[in-house]
Length: 99
Image (cartoon, rainbow, N blue to C red; front, top):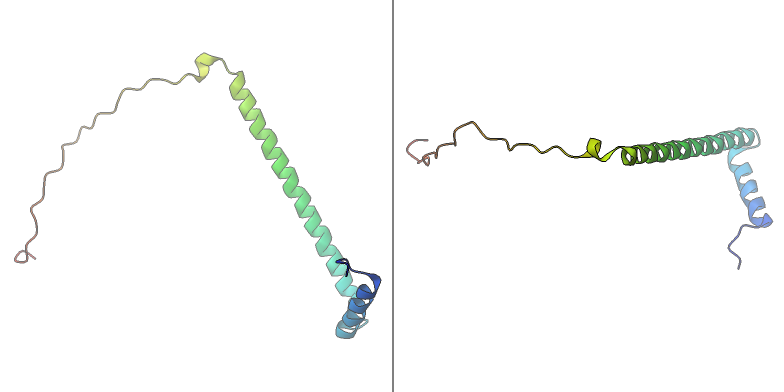
């Protein structure tokens, strides 16, 4: 048995939809289904365009970083930060009499 939908299966689905929704409501359902499919395709295309734009921007950032001279991208040696506050003192344990 093939796994694709043939003309008999499509006819059965159309007859069942016609019985459930009626002849007046079926065109409205078809148009709303078409609009939702076209909206989905439009959103998919927009997300693909955004992804391509992000990849292009990332590639430009990488190539501009590679084009900089070595002196401009060299890291600067920093002096270690020294703490100026005193070390905390040890606290005495709390006994049952104190609480």
